[in-house]
Length: 120
Image 1: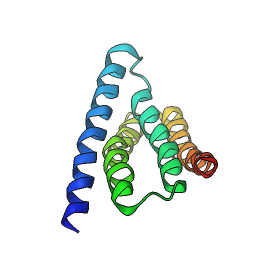
Image 2 (image 1 turned 30 degrees about the vertical axis):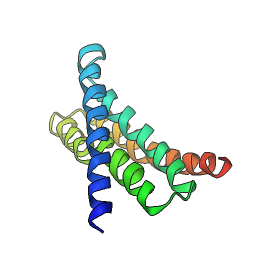
Image 3 (image 1 turned 60 degrees about the vertical axis):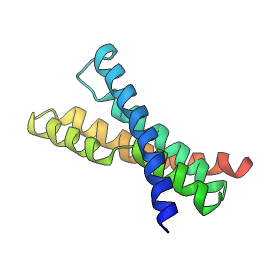
C-alpha cells in the first residue's frame, strides 16, 4: 500500500512539472484570451489516460503512470477556475466554448484513447 502511494506521488511530480512547463510556454507564446494551455493539457491527458486504462497495466504501473503522472499532469481545478473567471467577466462565449471543448472533448478523447489502447 505505502509503495503504491509513493509511486503515485513520484509520478505526480513528473506530471506536474510537465504541466508547469506547458503552462508557462503557453503564457509566453499563445494569446491570453483563451486558456489554450489548460485545454491542451487536459485533452491530451484524457486521451493518454484512455490509452493507459485500455492497456490493463499492473496496479503498480497504473499507479505510476495513470494516477501519478497523468493525475499530476491534468488539472481539473485550473479548468474550473478559468471557467469561473470567464463567467465573472461576462465572457459567455468563451465560457461555453471552453466548457464544451474541455468536458465534451475530454470524454470523446478518453474513449478514443481507450480504443487506441485496445490496439496496442
